[in-house]
Image 1 (cartoon, rainbow, N blue to C red):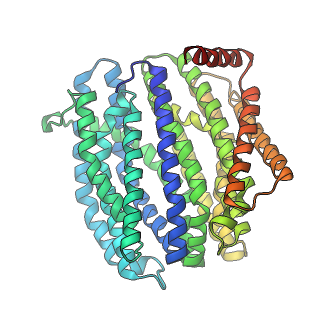
Image 2: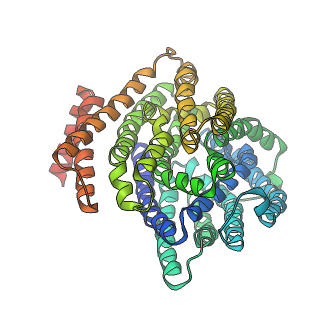
Image 3: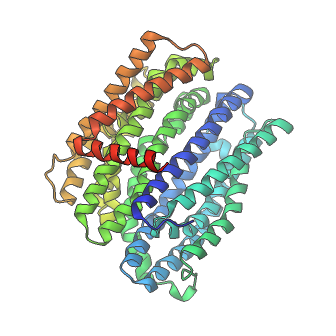
Length: 511
């Protein structure tokens, strides 16, 4: 299956990505509830904390990997196939050398884990196995990421999404078997994830050989200039990721060290659904990125801007509905999902975690411009500066106030809103040759979408307040339906609504 039409490729990328995310969210929903009920909220917190440790390691690998797909895509669509192989072989060798260098560090962390974090009553050996499996999964993922680059280059990310979908399904089945037939252990999650990552590598290789048969590793294709070029651009993504780590990647570690493992576990539970929403935003960006990069490579800035406008409208609707519906029914949701925990506290923490997306639900699609234009420096520096400010403010709040875990969850969101409005939106407008305030109207669109959803949920809850899973599902469905209908009239202009109507008629006639 290979779609030739670029618009259909992008749409199928998006749909398959959302479907994979939905399946994964369903699995995480049941898995987190099971872990908290049987192993305690601390166990769920250690699982998330182990993944955060891997994100610290990606600071090194990002410098080479984050821009490799971009350079390969640019050369491929400019007809320079030999250079594509140069970047491919060079990044593969870099990843191998990075693994060789990082493995001793990972072993040292696992062996001395009890000296680095507070474990208290959790089983030390189980936690160490958990961290060990997460690190092994990270090293395997480096190889898989290189094999998946052909999908970005050819704008067929839907292959990657479908593989992920299959992985999520198998992950759910294997976890069900493990927790059903074996004593519950917190490392099952990371162990099974590692096995599936290793098993997926041959699949990615087969698809790569179909999409780009000319793309083969050759040590003679390794070129220093390619490494230098990728590093010079990618280092800013490393800086960006460092800022991200300072903004949100240290939250569980700070809670573990300065408050307690129980507070860390509570925060990890509160972040489960917001992280899924953030992943949704990431999926939207990832699946729109190839088209934006390809259009930029062709020098078609007008087409790029139209693509961005379309992306922002889709993001405004999907991300705002996800955030506000979840927050509106947060207390009811947590009361049913985690009855042993404080539902109101969890809802507040969840809101603080994802509130930065309320004005940025649509404009977050603009981040693809940084990669396409290879202009990462300003955004990365801004991200890192706000990250440093975040750590300083959170430390001060934890030491001198009683805000506790609320300071950890909320400070980064407030700083993110300020950074996006003052720096990110004006700078992207400048890169596209537009007025500095061009994208502020899209910020207002995101805010309006969120307010519409809030009003819809208030209306539904006035009619009926859900008290069971079935009634909650119906109320959420009703809220989403009302909001989506209103958003279509608010976001789409008259011509776009007319085109949508014609398309729907065409589907009805030909169906």
